[in-house]
Length: 377
Image 1: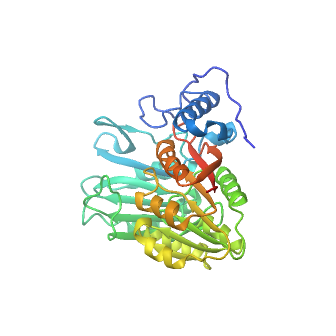
Image 2: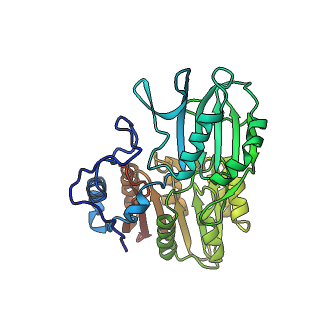
Image 3: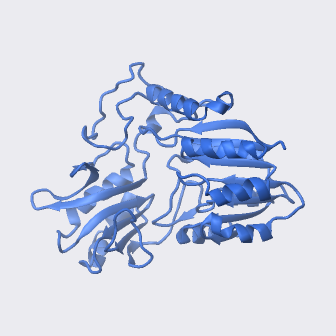
């Protein structure tokens, strides 16, 4: 059932307190919730035109939940003698500071203000990025060496704890840029290395989690209801993250296996779904192991949640030509690549039962879609 938020009828709304007019983030922040939702649905109807009659109403959250929800952020950091440390987003060659962004969760805003007050200056501390994943935060410095912050974190540990933060990391990565994280150079400055999300799942500083747990729960409920896994079924979960979906299949008694590229996510998935086998690597590279794992008895089921590029060509070919699941649930963050993959699956004998869109990123142009497919040939 769609939960539509209440908003002004006028599509243009004033900037909320804390919004920087020049900030390049949140492209829909000047739209009312209704106007934003209409734009997203129009976009989906165009991108998914062959299946437009299968498109369901947009799943959204209440107006109050559209602000202060963002607990996953990546902010650039710049030092100046006049202003000290500033955290924000780049607009051309200018950093736009957003210390009080109303879309950011209070935990993020509190941490930014604390860092602005306590961090050593540049070049003593060559900070480049602040990355926050829920209650885990990482300071990325573009250097092999930097000022030690151990004592500082200890001194302010009580303040950090009351802010809701669980772990503060220092990551020394001289080449940080398009690729934020490297394998080495990690140091836990304060707190604990793992946190638990709204589902009770363990995650670390590089983990991705959906930002609106209540909405994500609805998406998983819909996927589970459609796949209907049970004992004797074989369910493959690709791009499985920290195991939110894997744990569901395990509870249902299905024989399940997951694949995930991130080493940290794999470690967490194995803890969150201990009865499920999890393979690390690119999904395309794990096809040989998946071939050997699949059983001929029971239903074959597939759940995929790929990044923006969609399914790897090898994965799409294997799924549609070899594994041939009876039912497939595909959670996509790109309507364009979803449309491409749906065309290939339709040619392989699959029909779209329904397309369920979710507004996981209010105030932005992004929208995600859960496609439910059934093998008919």
